[in-house]
Length: 321
Image (cartoon, rainbow, N blue to C red; front, side, top):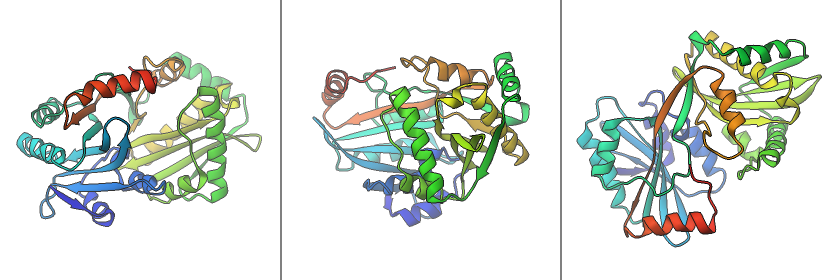
């Protein structure tokens, strides 16, 4: 395993197809815009087959940890190679290692990562489920169609953009702020950081307007034959009269016309308090329900696995899945 810099990571990542959004240079650069310390790793410079990047974080009761995005790997990588890469990760000078893989669940991945010493965390912080829509064969349920019919009576318009101004990004920030307040979301979006993210060639943004007022925005990434949902920013108005279905229908049609077959909703919050409506909305697409490899942890001190769970439960008051 070799540590590389961001520029080398960008070049080597081109050798990997259909990368999950959170492993792409675009998302890594977005984190860099926040001032986060990142590390980049590859198994080999001559024949790269395994790639990841990671955030260096300081966590109370643990110390310095690596929050790993990936790893992603070639189809012909062996189980032994993947195991060795993950084992080498744990030999780095950090007290803990967190992986939350957004690759589709694989028994081989689980075998390799368990042999490297990783375990499932005690208390699952994020859902491991997602829904993937086939844009070539999109066949939503009657509720989706009913909402689309409602939308046909409204004056909705969609604007798609590959290049955004700072003013566009400020609209996204304000829409997210309204959405975050109503849904009690913990993360924020800043216009200057969104601007940097959207400079990447694989990022596209769709704005929904009603009578010249911006009422929703969707930020997606496109990787070869699949696209990923990144940010959904909805005002209160956009929850009425099929507005969200109208926007997503436009995106699915757009992707189909671009010959991009799949759209990954990037997790569904099944079981999360107050998020049942989001799950029902995504489920109404009749997309395929898939499971990610999801969360894995490794601690140099094995007792920290239990202490970290208690810390999240009692201090952070996390709502576990």
